[in-house]
Length: 277
Ligand code: SAM
Image (cartoon, rainbow, N blue to C red; front, side, top):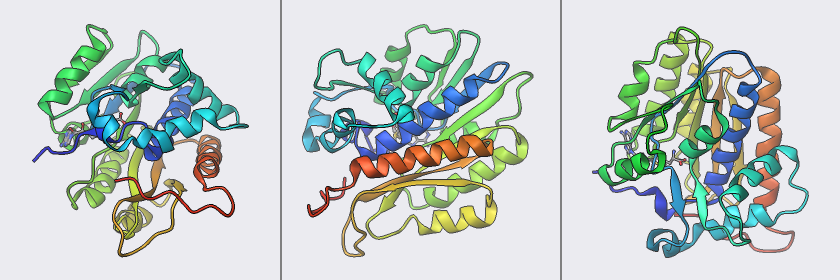
């Protein structure tokens, strides 16, 4: 049932979009007053070793974070994320890739809180190792959809929620929108990011159509790096729905996702690299 393992994909182009946008969202939220509660439905292991056998299988990071780190003129918001990644990688070739929980822990303050759900026993154990006894972090071996559906506004906290399933189940495409809608109704101040894959066969269309009707105010941040092809498999891009962010923050995020699209666009005249698995 739980066959997806993010280590095979860590640092790919879709990850760079997700993690750069999360990094910017949390940086902007940190400027406000009061405690932040960061919640993640599908946390993964936190930190990824790009030399692991899994990451080496398809070496997806080579067309992802490695390209971004080498890009010229990244712009300040992408550059800020890349310098965060460099903190884990003092040498030139990236080895350690920080996932979303590690980005949150790196940006949030000692008085903030981090609630993570991860269901896979191996990934859950690795996540516990990543955080040791960081007093801000609580890790549940729980279904992230169920955990987030119970969210209510905290006494002082502003909530940032990342919804990031693997989309192995077709039902995830609609479940993520329903969950975001439910959380927004319970806590209208929550900032919600929903990551989704842009698939060669366009199957993410159901998610986008449901978001248009249920979350019309959501900003759609998308980066696409290969041409769609109804007969092909795999990712040709990735996107995020951003809900509950101030308009100027959503504008900054859109500019960042456009920059990432350009960084991953094939050079003029060159064939696009293939989809990620
Ligand atoms: N958010 C991570 C990051 O960006 O660093 C990557 C997470 S990965 C896309 C999805 C994770 O969800 C996997 O580690 C998988 O084991 C876990 N998972 C799958 N179903 C789950 C569920 N119902 N609840 C919580 N975790 C689940």
